[in-house]
Length: 92
Image (cartoon, rainbow, N blue to C red; front, top):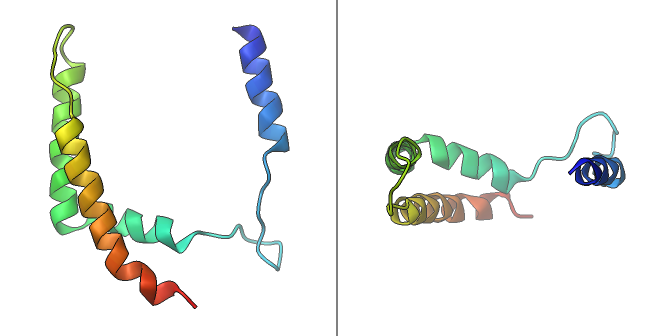
């Protein structure tokens, strides 16, 4: 395992970092910002809460067949649907 950690650390050093033209700030993908906002608001937030409750329930058990796939898909669908409405406002 030690070699794996070393490889992981070595790969971090070669990972490209995109800088803004002024070299002061990292560029931020507007889709990430939009999705973050969608996750925190309204209906999507409620789906996120249901997903977290499911994850907590599953993680608290040692043997369960329950997965949170349905909750995850509902949450991701909500976030994607919300973000799709907003992203076109940011395109040039």
